[in-house]
Structure formats: C-alpha cells, structure tokens
Length: 127
Picture 1: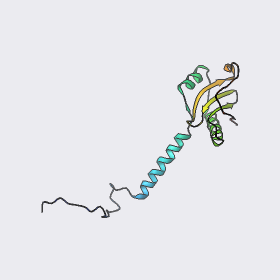
Picture 2: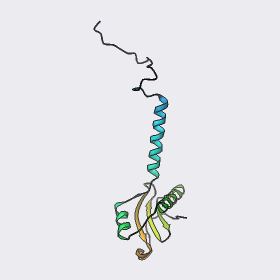
Picture 3: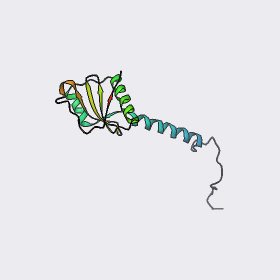
Picture 4: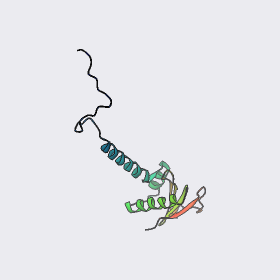
C-alpha cells in the first residue's frame, strides 16, 4: 500500500486543469510569439555609428519618416538588395537590408563628395 501513485502517460487529464496547456492555447501562444518576432524583425534598427551621426548632424526623424524608411527597406528587400542607399527628402541612409540596420545617416550638408561605395541598390523613400 505504500506504492507511489503512478499515472499512465496515455491517461487524459481534465480539460479545465489550469496547469495543462491545450493544443489550441499552445498554437495561439505560438502564433502570438511568431507575430511579435516578425514585427520586431521588420523594425528598423540603428547602429551606434548611425545614432551618433543622427545626433551630431541633428537629423530629426518623425514617426512618418521612420515608416517611410521601413517601407523603403521592405521594397529593396523584395528586390534582393543587401546593402542599400535609401534616399529620403534631403537625407541618405546606408542600410544593411538583411539585418534591417541603418549603418549611417547623411544629411545634405554632410554629403562631401556624394560618392557611396559598397552598396548594391538605391531606393527612394516615397511619401
């Protein structure tokens, strides 16, 4: 009589047990996690170098500007771009498309020679 209680692995537990996750809730959680991951993947990030350039050059990016930049990166990604120059108004951004990472930011006052190297595409960030 002192034998421990054993449960068969095939035994079904009551559905209303809060410690048990049903397949449906697991799928819903998986969907939410996947959606959050995709949303984060689609967000544009800025390298430390780009952040310093934006601050030192006093470049102002509104929510609309960030959305336009993200849309431009999506456009060039669909076309197979890897390192792209994104032109938006009087600003230029060098973007690593795969990582969705802005590498540097240039305004019209800091263009110097206007030569950009090691890019494979140019995209216009339309309004």
